[in-house]
Length: 250
Image (cartoon, rainbow, N blue to C red; front, side, top):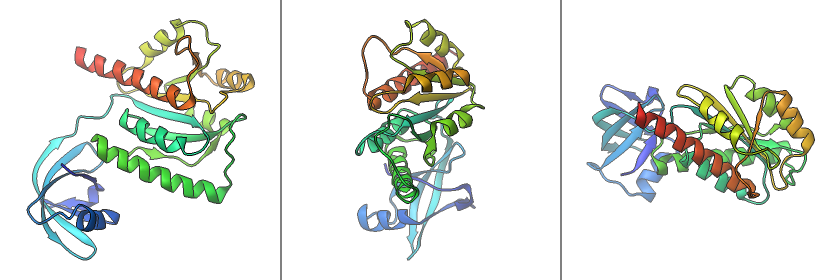
């Protein structure tokens, strides 16, 4: 069933109003007709089963058939701080991070990042990246659209992460798995988690030192060296499994 996102202001009196680019998508791509059903999330944890009632030039009117609590989000907010990778890898990273439950994605410039974006190019990229996040959220049945933030420097990213509860940075020189296990025990429902992933070539030692000075914990992901896109997926998968298991045991 097709899934769309609206703001709470678009819901009321038993109706949902679809506006913006989704209007064209419903009309001309999906070619939906009156009477067809779709799901709508309002970003507050509610999901609506709706029947298409009327298509106007700039909006579509839906009638709410059922409402239920949308219980698909992880019990902790995971912030992925991703070092800028080469080519179009960032698009894949955003898509899969959204599928794996990331709450927010922050592109980060680091010393070894090959990609250098000026302000104009960065703004266009962020628009594109947010469109990819929205598509991935629809496809994976998320109740929210994770936001892709504007590109930050490594220093800005560390400052942004200061208020988060648990801060992790996978590092190939981190010793053993003990720190990883201990860090996972800190990730409990209601917590916020920062995950820092380096670009191709990883972080420089000075960046690791700077991160540690700001309370970020170096952790090991095993004895192999992972690509930048693989490392992020690995941490998000581990955290998703950890949180889902905790929920199941409660």
